Image (cartoon, protein in one colour):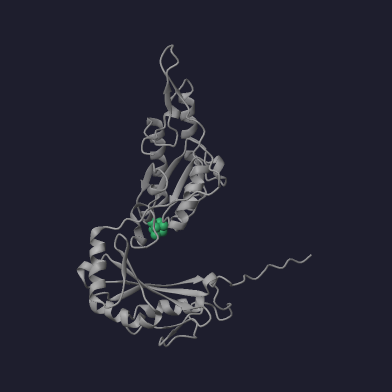
Amino acid sequence: MEDRFIKFLHSGKLAPIKKWGTYWSLWPVHLVTACCGVELAHTFAAGYDGERIGALNYGIARQTNLIIVEGAITRKMAKILRVTWEQMPDPKFVIVMGACGLKGGLFWNGYNLVKPSDVVPVDFYIPGCPPTPEALLRGIRQLQDKIKSGEAKTSVEFTEKDLGVGKPIKIVPKPKKVSKTATIVVDVPRKVDERTKEIAKKIEDSIKNIKVIAVSKNRVAVNVEKEKMKEVAASLKSLGFDHVKNVNVIDVINEQKFIVEYHLGSYSTKDLMPIILNLYTSISRDDPKLKSLSDIFPSADYMEREMHEFFGVFFEGNPHMGSRFLLAPDSPEFPLRKDFKLEEEVYLR
Ligand code: SF4
């Protein structure tokens, strides 16, 4: 992908016109992934009027030639990004805006973040959180400059063909193969480094009867029985994990269970500071109860209450179970459960 250059726009007699046309006709596809999207909307609204520099958002991937990745791309969203990119005609370009797309930004330690450059070839990065509309306009101008100078990368790779007379000519590549199934699998490998493996081993050796798996760089996971959660959490605390960053519940409805996970971090032990440890267990969906870890990690309290309201998991020992603090008093119960039914709209005839 690194070698794909914008030769298409710089070949043949019509090159100046093609170049000029592309320069002034950048159609960014609507693909809002995160909060940077608000700045993008601002850029193309009346105040900044992005259209005056020849770019206007467009709704249909097949008629667009620019993706502006607006911030974070998760593993789930990576596939959508790739599918959208595949549908766009050549030549096509990618701008990534926002710290999240560059280095993870706010979510640098998120277990699910993917670098956009691992999914599609990127022409231009715009730093900031969020970048201002001025920065985005400047990014688009920079891309236009690259189109003008011929540096911009695209998916078109021309091959030279010698016709036997005159100079060899450049020909367009064969059409892309269409996959038999309409599925595009974006499999961004998780990389595990030696240091993370070492830390996983150290934790495993320090606590009896647990298995610690290094899942990717600075990410380790520990799966335990629900009865052992408190005991293991207390041992992890004594090793230096001093706070809970996040509490999640995953509804695995086909197995009639919830997975409850606590992401632990450390502010006090230097070696552990980059590490996020995912301590998780499974509980039955029929009787979703688990002992609260809020007495060991006070920062778990708020998030346990949140998960209680959304999924109905009862964290025994957390004094706020049963009360509401996020959802409005008249909102329905457990709206994030997979079997939650949305109210159907009723139309009058
Ligand atoms: S860079 Fe900042 S504004 Fe943009 S998506 Fe990330 S958190 Fe949101």
